Amino acid sequence: MITIYLKQYNKIVRNADVKLFDELGYDDILWIDLLSPTVKEQKAVEDFMEINLQTRQQIEEIESTSKYSETENSIISNSNFFVTKGDGFTIEPVSFIVSEGVLVSLRDMESRTFNEAAKRLQMNSRNYPTGYHLLISILEVRIDFDADLVEAMAKQIAVVSKDITAAERMDSDMLKRINLLQENTMLIRENIFDRQRVLSGILRSDRFPNDIYPKLSLMIKDVNSLISHADFASERLDYLMDAALGLINIDQTKVTKIFTVVSMFFMPPTMIASIYGMNFDVMPELHWAFGYPFAIGLMAAIMGFTYWFFRRKKWL
Image (cartoon, rainbow, N blue to C red; front, side):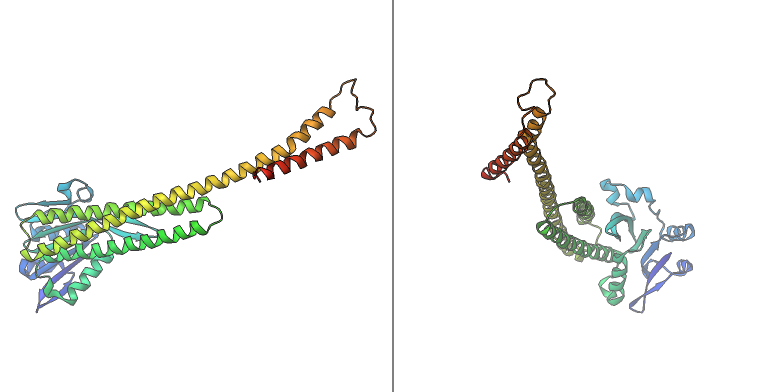
């Protein structure tokens, strides 16, 4: 699907007809958004803009030149965007190309970021005279959503922390919750680092309008702040994991202690029973009328003494 944002009558008009490329020039178009485009739509954009769109493999590369690069006529930037999926996230790479003041975006999935950026564009088109301004706006929206993700993650970590404090015992479900939060936090952190690399590349460039650079500096500060928050969240999760494992070890120690105490209770009676169960010809108590009650009483006495001794040592 292709969406073309046209500059008409001091406002932005959306259109999806590639035939417009035969009638319009660069000055008439602000943004060409490609969402899972067909081969025909890609070819039409490449012919009109005189560029080569990035392949999926090129977009997913992690080299610095892949994240931001410049050619004689265009600027190419690739960045990762989060798409919420159940309790976790999936990362969707997006390619941006700015040429002749027109922004071309290429993606394969719907994203809140692009919907919000399109809404802002429709509400106040004067703030986005060129594709350069629009690219910065999309990244700014993405940073705002990243901040929301970090804040939501912090709230989830706080809930897990309270649950650990209130829980009488730990189980594997709690460990799985912590592990899922750790995975999501690492993904968020990597995603924010990706944003930092893109912004750093733009800040070093001299191809952008001068009014963009002050905003870029503020955006980089926001990204650095988000990285610090993500690092703190990661450290807190490590602490919670250690605490949960410690509580599990305590529970296991209690169980082991119970088995040890029980075995100690029955060890002396077992020894007495073993002695009186020997089949020797000569045993003084063999024909003793009170032998059985004596053996039972001796067992009970030793068990009572063992219990008193453990209580005195505060092992029970």
